[in-house]
Picture 1 (tube, helix red, strand yellow):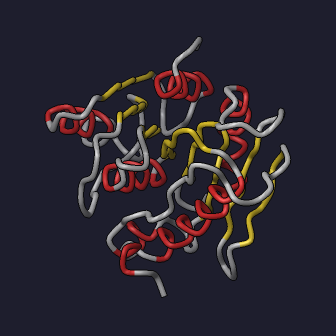
Picture 2 (cartoon, rainbow, N blue to C red):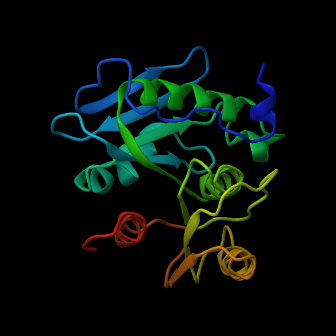
Picture 3 (spheres, helix red, strand yellow):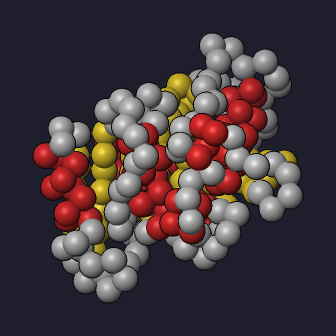
Length: 226
């Protein structure tokens, strides 16, 4: 059963000043989270040190491995950790009936990561349904996530608001799955009107994530060369 804070979309895990356990070695590993729950963690090469953490949510029907394939290399090239959970059902709990199970799994995964990896900052990101989920959770947990990187999102329905995360959104002008006018374009306008710092990028294309968009999103979050 999901904890009450999970049903409210709130993440309880927070990075400690000093992790208590031995850091994970570089590479990709699957975290042990119990039956029907999975997440993959990607640790960059090099000795343990405080690193940014990108939590990335896949689209409907996707997997953690697909998220790692999409953002793992460009993120670790920036010396960032990547945590990629898989939804328990075919898509995320918010879309599949209500917040709870997936939030609880993510909280457990974050607790494992924070216990072993020094984390300097956190961003939530995702594609399609995962982008909608990242926006919804990010706006509700802006006291943990400093940024949200949303690739072709459909909507944002945070159960509450906390903090002021920076928002980056990309959307294709020929998206036939989540049309740009009522999705990415509308979200960027409404979030900007609500006082959030929004970077919005449109591109000629469909319901896809282009490598250049991943680079642009990471640059907006982390700074440095594109």
